[in-house]
Image 1 (cartoon, helix red, strand yellow):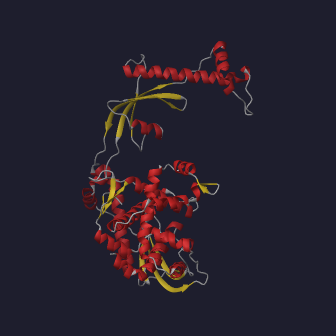
Image 2: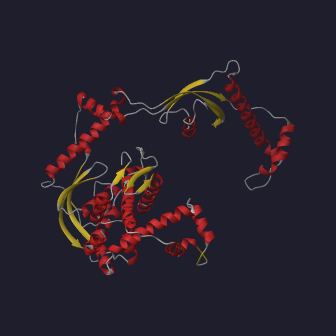
Image 3: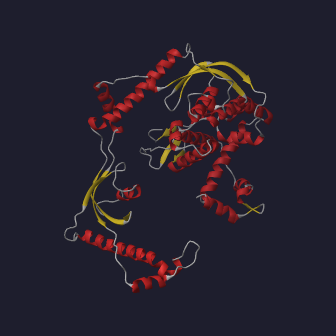
Length: 488
């Protein structure tokens, strides 16, 4: 394997950087829910290396933050979902694991000395220009990382870099020029956007039922909770002068005006009355909680009923989450303040999720049918039209000109241009994560005079970020990749 890689490295260097450029401009999909198979605790296994859910979350978060910076803080979960961030995060981890398998097969390691040389050189861990262990520990703590976790992660990263170094050309200028040329290409294109709204469909009942039967497990009800609850209304009494005075003496240092000056007893009295009534209300709510648990509510007090789901609840989201933690062994929730009242909740029955009947799922089935059918029809339309269509002609555009593609949002434009510049076809069509399809015809291409020159640091970063697809395929044939995640 190593011999093969070294023999072909002259060609791999160029394609690695070109595919890396494509990766940098790509859009990603948002973090979704996933289910595990029999391999609890792992989302994938590559050769002998397992990929954990924590690693997938971290990879996703890193990519999301990068794109949030790229879009100046305007990159949200909806855009991430449209762009395939979750798949990209998992692909990144799989690629890394493939290289680590190769490293292991040749007995390559990162020594403690190599690790510490890198750690000690990082400015984030320095104090007055010198590495400081206390600063090292504190910086990791602030980023919610343990020293062991960070150092294991660094060893993996360094081992990947060491392995990729086998592919490196001795002439860095060639690599820098390859990157500069890739960034400096501009295309003039003719393009036409096809959207799902162009397709009109009317599904039959037979088609819908067939789709429902095939995908029943996708259509489930949310878990619901039948609850009873009682409410303690706010107490509005007039405390005695002694109660007011005693409270003032104990808490006057907390009773201050806007300038920080301690209020007089007379000026603080309205605040004290409010605080004493609040305390009395909370105390009475605790008494009500005990009576409710004992089944001895006062005469005339009746518990109200409600059915709670994550999507529909009479309570706020935080309280709804707490209700979902109740069970037969712990059916009561202690008094929780809602507005100016206290509510005590009891779980009567938990209704687990179940597969929806056809009638219950029909709205969702129609949406799925329309999405899949329109996607198929749009692909057929593009396949039959991309060689003869007449569309909008652009000026010369580069990968950075996503805003110049009329009819597409900036993220869609970025995704389109990334795929366009990665394509080897003069004419064709590109399907976006949003469902839109863009037919294109490259009219003219040129190399810009003011090409962005990639420096040595950029080269090194790119070496560690993505592998040439030919290498990936070779490694995949050697180390099996098993994915345990559904829906990615």
